[in-house]
Image (tube, rainbow, N blue to C red; front, side):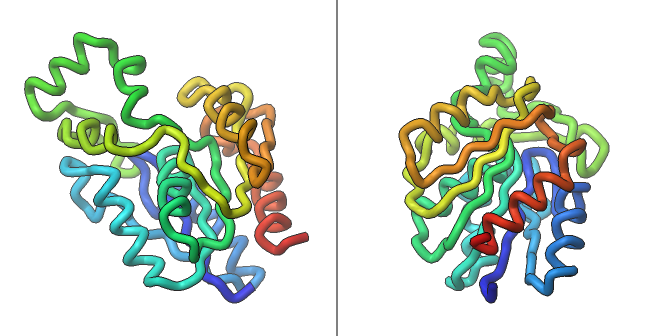
Length: 210
């Protein structure tokens, strides 16, 4: 395999997350090239899906790529693949489909309105291990994008059955109408950290065509 692999981290995470480091180590042992761009570009407060997709486009550089995305990174991988046929395959780990439309459910109407009115709110950033401001433009921009991107490339979708952040029902719905999607539901939570060895082996076989 000569194509580059890009790992796309999740919301409030970064390119040095546990999953990113683990996958990079495993890919390196096989002689595979893997990059993990910082999708926030160091400016979490002004985060949007559009800006993150632009980061992915620059990292891909027009080359054939495989994508591995976790949570929001999984949703971004699907959005990017649907718009860029040079993506060869995509691995989506607990993808956050419908990202912008799920904020009312997560925050409640009152907090969402407060966020909109203030223009920003404080969010815990796991990569930084501290609270950071986040602008409401993330929701406004996110509503421009479809909940379920029309990805035509081969997709491996892995989702934990005990995920209490993004219900696996979103992944079931995405996979049900798309014969190009291989869905794996595993006994794990949103992070999938307790199944990383299995996740990587399944990913390796999928990307290698084995």
